[in-house]
Length: 119
Image 1 (cartoon, rainbow, N blue to C red):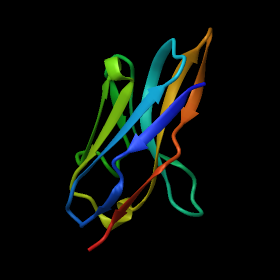
Image 2: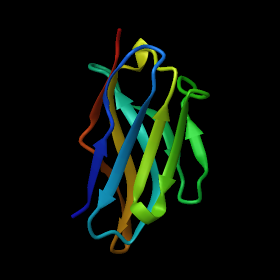
Image 3: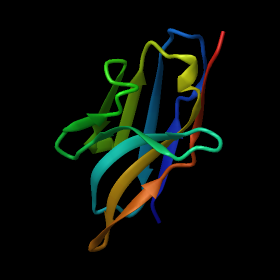
């Protein structure tokens, strides 16, 4: 059984910063892409940022220049540093990982962590 556990969400003022963390645990052979998505009520889940096992990154235009994704492969952990936060960044953020369990990779999701940007 594989689990992704997120932490780091919360309430922050506009212009502030937050760092989200997500750690994968369980019977894991390999972890490929890891990333963060977000989903507002009534909207589709959208990509925030992803990072490959070799460190290549991809960002949504809405967060490019304000966010940095990184990972610690030894800890099976992915991070998202978000700076200059705006009210429109308020929503639930979900961790994602493509994890090989046995012979086949499977996508896994965290439970979600709320980020609220408000004064």
